[in-house]
Image 1 (cartoon, rainbow, N blue to C red):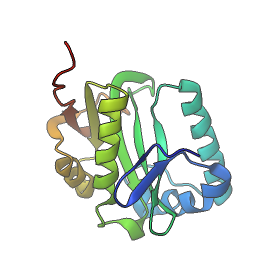
Image 2 (image 1 turned 180 degrees about the horizontal axis):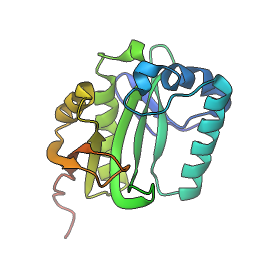
Image 3 (image 1 turned 90 degrees about the vertical axis):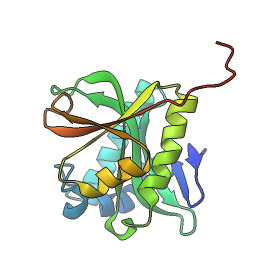
Length: 183
């Protein structure tokens, strides 16, 4: 299987539901991890089914977006997930805006993995997908994710109710200026 991208310590690759369900459940079955997501998986089997649905959904979209496993190179262990996808409106319909997001197992918090994977994903979004802007949406009380957006150089835009049907903080990063592109 081809990796989407690699950083110094991490590999970002497609989820493999049969192989990754148990490790994904360590992330999405942990109420502390999912506290800000609003939903917690209840079993390894439900996690496997969720991964299978998600992999198929992004395969059908076929637009380069997705939700990928983040694997620690040193241990080959899934330590989190990184997302680059269209933001949904309040009715869960896709908008023209794209978001970056990250979820990591508790044992991987505080290691800089979200920032490291986030930098790689922003580069992918701007350089490969040619996105003009990438957003992040964060619940106002989720201070750790707010700090990640700051380390990624994302600018705070303010509060919004435009996405997911709830009030969120909106952060934005514009694509870097391209020099020598012949425009």
